[in-house]
Amino acid sequence: MTDLLDVIIVGGGFSGLAAAKTLHSQNKKIILLEARSRVGGRTHTRHLPDGKYVDVGGQWIGPTQDRMYELCQEHDVTWYETYNQGKNILDLNKTLRTYTGLIPKMDVRSLINIDFVLKKLDRLAKSIPLDKPWSAANSKTWDSISLEAWVRKHCFTSDCFKIVRAGLETVYACELNEVSMLHALFYIKSGTNLTCLLSIDKGAQQHRIKGGMQTLAEAIATPFLSHIKFDSPVKNILQQDNRVIVSGEGFSYHARNVIIAIPPVLISSIAFTPALPLFKTQLLQKLSMGIVGKVFGIYEKPFWREKGFSGQVVADEHAPFQTFFDSSPADSAYGVLLAFCIADRARNFFSQEEGARKKIALEAFSKYFGKEAATPLHYVDHCWADEAWSRGCYAGLYPTGVWTNFQNTLAKPTDLIHWAGTETSDIWYGYIEGAVRAGERAAREILN
Image (cartoon, rainbow, N blue to C red):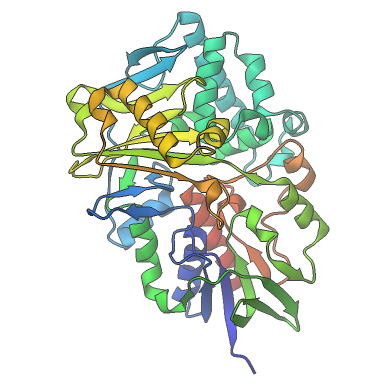
């Protein structure tokens, strides 16, 4: 007779770790199966040979992400302010200009238009019930059009459209025609509001983790590290006789319940017996992942600060990257410029060889910050769509029709199978906070 566990958790990202932490604290017999050789999922702190590090995955926390701050305090993990002083750069129509604050300096008509579009999105998002976005008064209308269709209709100048598009691509990690307007509004409300999603100060990019985000993931995992099996991708899940049998190459475990905490696009790589319900399989066929690349120049010091620059850039579609940030460590012992390469720009950039990518990147870095930017100590880039166990970032995308047709199908338990992952959270969907909340919720479903 195989030893019967209480719960098997599939996936060692923040959602799986949060579920495991909750269950372990209640003395449940658990095992966590992780396909990678590390915890952290869509967060990953890459350490370089000389001791420097960069967060190639999720790296920020901000106001209203209460569970993340509580976890940091509980595990003595320190956070610090994202650098946000000095002039920002706008690269628009092949012309560079500087500005301060959130909204760039432009012609008055475009500025008024940008303000109108962002405030209207926020106003519409307020009406979305987070637990039932499909029940909003205009849900069918909003779910029948893409975010791009709505944005094009409400941007009256081409410059307004270019800036709004660059900002929203950075928020959603996709082309604006890849998500429904209803999903876009749900996502805004889920992350407090659009100003919060776009901002550093009092926003989603306010704080970073000292030592990198994986420091927190590893700290959470430490008490139950002996219950984690790495390099263990799950191939089969069989439900029979009030138990679940979860197996893969060289392992098979039996439990009363299972929590699946992996990106939706990976679920179809598991063979389920009996098959998942039709609604669930149909929904999973319709969800794709966003595409994000992070591109880093690592320097002896953050030299741009001495020149009065924040390290922040917003660029229209003629540039290879949408946005830049100063991603230096807490002590500024070295300087890190981070460029976000998203959606079609990412598909174009990452289809080239690394040497070509580095050349394109350093030309862009030099254009914005001068010749010092052309010679970093290290160049690092990372595309999450290339990772077999993520296949994209930040999160699963709901195209037109999916919210209203499938509603909360993704998070609904399937007999003994419970579902986690940031995509099953109604608060901070797509963020690490959402992943943690979803993992804790799935664990509570089982405990209750």
